[in-house]
Amino acid sequence: MKTIGLVPGGMKPFHAGHNFILQEALRECDEVILFTTVKDRGVIKGANMKKAWLDLIQPLLPGLDAVTFVKSPIGAVYQYLEDEGLPDNEYRIYGGAEEVNRFRPEYLAKNYPDLTIVQPAAENPSRYDRSTATGVPVSGTKARKAIEAGDFRTFKSYLPDFLKPHAREYLDILVS
Image (cartoon, rainbow, N blue to C red; front, side, top):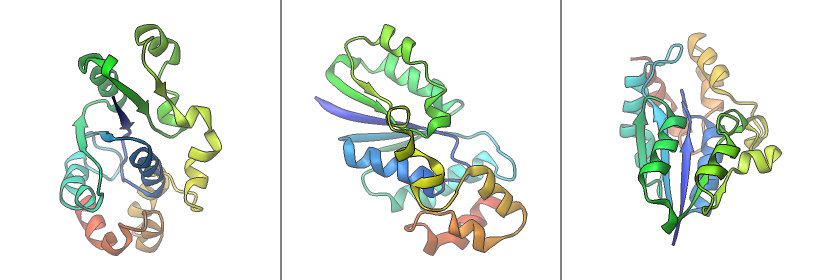
């Protein structure tokens, strides 16, 4: 039996808080699948974020098995659970409070009673809180505002350490 981590989110842009959650999944699971959307969000076009994932972020993230681009990350997790023949694996859903609150635990329990689906953000909110995950009060909204204001220094401060050396390239992809 494998433990599979499912990480849904819009992630526009991918920042240190997202990375914190993703790193938890990578540490705890045999396989990790990230679901993100190709929808535009504020100043970030979905196609540009997809390019950033494929050309820059994913190659720098060892252990991430797949980044799946979908219309609705939460809906895609439900679809994945439905399609994958669940009894052979343990599944864990990772996300910040915003993402986890979009799931319906009662629905999951009713439709997948033989499975262990762990929602770490719901079980231990302080550990998965975006504002405390990195010591930087980061959010996608704040990162988009920094981009809009042309504030490269603040934008860079919101990034995970592995991405900071590539901050200019990342920003150029996002705003191209």
